[in-house]
Length: 152
Image (cartoon, rainbow, N blue to C red; front, side):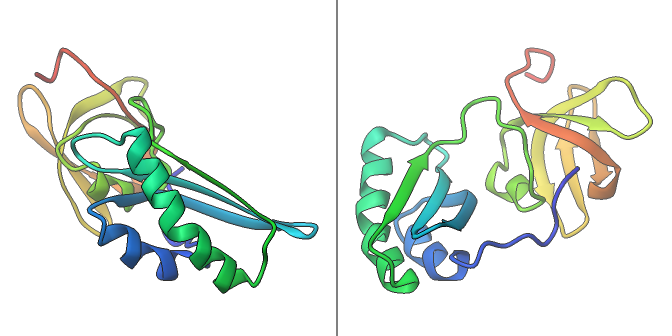
């Protein structure tokens, strides 16, 4: 099930900084655990995320998180989404435009496979081997990035 409106409290503070580095936020989750503050950040750029990219983002946002949370005990993890990521939020379809995806639609037992062409507030459009299809987000049971020879 895709999420529509779940937004982490740090997103408005960190997104402009990270976007300014030419990198997109795929997922951001933060939480307080006793006296520490844990942050998990998944980042993406079309030509791939390197270890250096993760390090650069880490060094850039760590001090900002300290200031925002007024906490010095921070556990920050920065990583890439991986090649077969399960898409969890509707905004990920915009981040992964032009990438291969497979989508399990409600009431069907087979995957719809294609390239993400475009997405709106309530739908995604994919290009399959034979046609373009528009799929409503509320009809998606599961979606995953992945390479598929059928689409190429």
